[in-house]
Length: 140
Image 1 (cartoon, rainbow, N blue to C red):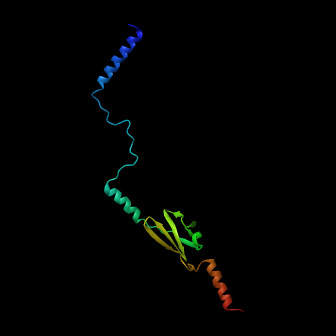
Image 2: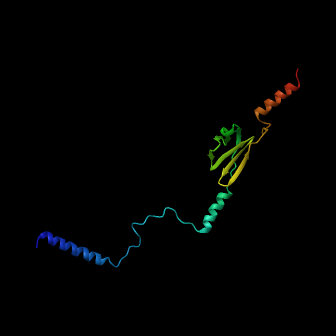
Image 3: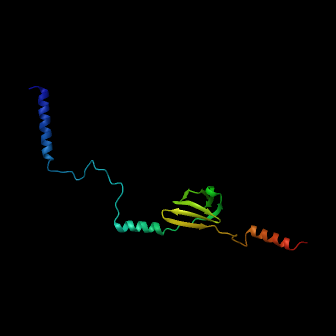
């Protein structure tokens, strides 16, 4: 026999012995299985998550509206939005006089702009306006 043939026979014997030694053991995990990317939640946990989302109120401040047909815009919490744009998942669908209509899924929300000044008697603007009004009422 040639040395190459002897090496092949010895290799086959070693592989056979090793395979029979581990034949009784099975793998506990499939090494080719893909890992789970998301954990499954029990039914009550899913319902709780949905209820929390539904209960979260959305109260942004609508500070300005500009009526210009399909080019109408609003200022919401300092951000300018055009019709069709979204803020926090709510899409601006309509702009009316002093109000804006937003939609999220089937939910429809109308935000109204506060009209009239929030009178703070201590503010310098209020003091200045009241002084001007007094001067106009009492000309000298």
